[in-house]
Image (cartoon, rainbow, N blue to C red; front, side, top):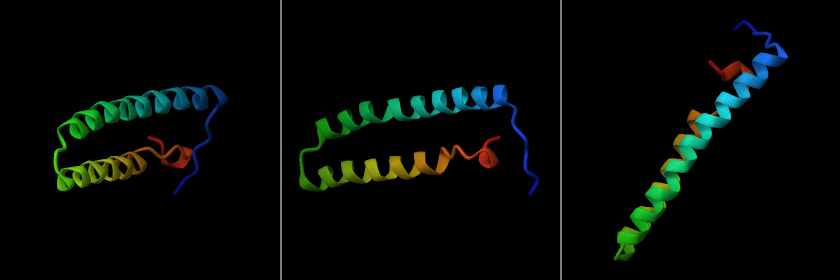
Length: 72
């Protein structure tokens, strides 16, 4: 794998784009969580809410990796 050299301005632009995309992904989660928690009426549905949070965290952790070598 070749190592790309990033200029300071490219690093700043990449960071801004990364942060904006991460914010969009993270901002969706609380609304969905509130909706799911509001309708959870049984213990099983409560655990479904927990499963949703775990899945969201895994998905976001896999999608967002700020190492320069991983950025496209």
